[in-house]
Image (cartoon, rainbow, N blue to C red; front, side):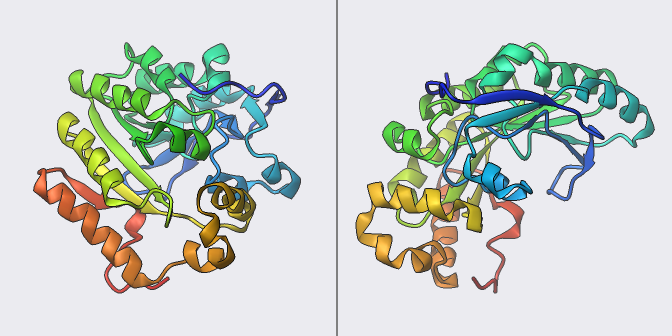
Length: 285
């Protein structure tokens, strides 16, 4: 289950112009986001940078807006679209706590399946297990973000997301149901979760469940600098003075990280790849 809800999280409803957006993410044709904002409050989340209101970006984790007319728009748009893979919740988690009350994501899945659109899900929430009856091998793949298996560190990085052991359970459950599963090891934050022991533990989960492992670097945006500074003040105060350099390490650092993760995966016969091409040969930071 998720961590304790914030007493001052504000929920409201908004009207959306469209349900589906064309996606540029690898493997996805469309995306749909039932919610704006996210209660998980992850300190590294760059989704806040897509908000036009900087004050809202600074309050990330304290508000969630549900799209009131999303289902109606989805029913209108799907018959007009060429069939393709829909990423559900690519910007904010579709299984955050408000979903437990609204069932908005579940109803989206029902509509997508009825129109024959395959769905890709990514989450940090054990609430997804509620919809196991809908999530079938022929229509879905399920990805789970695991930045660390250290429960205390995860609680500081992702304060109101499900704890790591619950996320492992998600992967195990859907893998046992023959649903394609993948683990998103990201973001890798220098000095925080970039240790080889952390990588080894997550790779073992991928091995056990037959999951693809995607790994990714930190997407550093201006809007996340303050929460990251607060994180380092608690976790690694000795690195605080040199924080801009720490968060934007050299190409050689990322090359070493990439080689380490991929070597661990080869040793355990785990399929592995860099997400979004961030670790391409010759890339410079």
